[in-house]
Image (cartoon, helix red, strand yellow):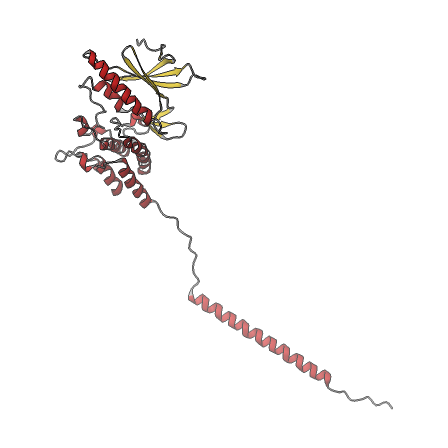
Length: 331
């Protein structure tokens, strides 16, 4: 039985439900009882494993640093806002915006592939957010369908659960890797994440959506260590090339920024979108034009003849009227 449910932490966050738990801590739904209507909040409880007293001091410093990063990231419309962070009883808490909606595991399902336009739209939304994140010099480190929420209010994708916070525990407990198997590239497994490590993870999400195959079941070429996903379906060459570049095994060969990926995606969609066409009307044939000309000329001749005849008739009539008539003799 978890004793934190029902408790009020930080003075005004009442814990009402456990959302999930893992090696880094626990996540709860809470209500802010100091605000009108008691709005829902997400509370993350982090539990560093302290080996010696100096670990607590290091964790506190790192916690405050990473919290400041989350405050800045929360200014983006597609990243949950951070409302508060605090420490109680040597445990660290983050209070974030509660997002109503569903995560992408409800849309990306095994055996139920999405079509290319659906996947491209998902990619464009994710990379729009990721471009902002990388501009802040932050690496998410744990992008996967479960950390992408489709917000009910506007149907936009929200990026949640930044791995930066997990550093607070991993700096103390070095045995816990940050990320989810299947979505983690090799350099991140070695503890050297790059911005393009996030790009790799998004590429895996897209391939999972296109193929309906989970990452750990995708075939790998033993010689190149590249994922041979294109053999599992028919995909347009342009989109296939974009995804291949996102998931290269050796990170220097990947896209190096979210902006680069967005540019490729936008160029691809622009090239495949049909341009509006002006409706064409059949042009009259040359024979039709000739026939029309003959008719007009004929009408002109007929009109001329008629007018001439009328004028001649009028002239004759006038002449006859002017001729003197013989006088009548009266006897």
